[in-house]
Length: 342
Image 1: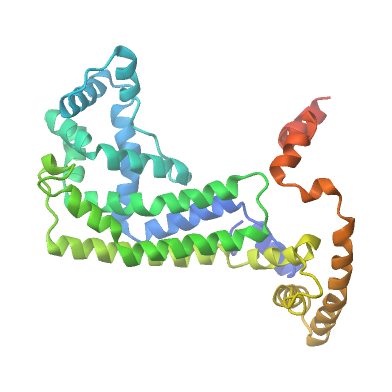
Image 2: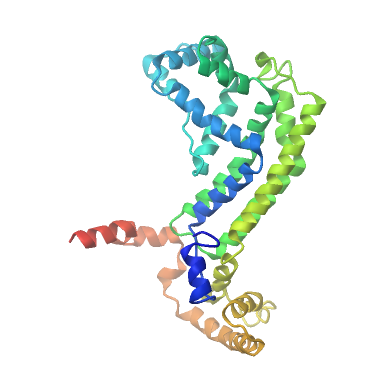
């Protein structure tokens, strides 16, 4: 899927420039997020830390015991053996290509930063703990965690939308636009900065960390938040700008979407999307005008088809899924595998 030398790019150059290629939308989103992170060197280092942190505690009873002890002392807890095991597995593993995992790992650090900080301080003879302490024990790192904790849930929500088996291509563009508008709101409101200031205050939940947020550091955090969200917006748009608008335009052929003839929207319905399709598939103005004329007539056919749609298709996906036979509910990949096996 390389933009210049990938198979799809070569086919478009050599065989059919009108060809539509669809890259896995979940991976495309992950790549866009990774692009944004790579543009900010410090941010990339922070996102790699959950993996380092997980490896630090994984399969190390001594380090896990120190973490549990700190939890007990910090929160005055008395844990059973089963609870101790659960707490010992609390550090979440993350991978850079799976944004749901990174979101979960950052959320864990956000919630347990003080516990982790005090654990690293208690392991003063452990070289890895000393190295992690240098990174965790700074306002810059903590501010970045708060920023990511604010931004990543929106990206994770978009990723979950894309991972649904019944995602409609017509909803891709609107889902992306909603997410980008949400991120823009986060950049304007700067709620993560206000939350950090409250948490490191003498009465805040991180008061024991001894960290303070100076006006200069607050300005740095604000600049980083603005830069990161701007980079995200640019990279997400770049990754989805090629064929997604063309594919999304096909939504006009859904008979259920056509407004009634008496509706004021009927005359204009589908013109913009049809123009996108005509421009993509036809190179001459004459052909493009012909497509637009055909669309004006075809809308009436779609309107007539509305009354011929089977009742089953008018139900929601959930109702249809519940009514479907067991073999239809299986994942298509499993059906293919079973067929090949037989």
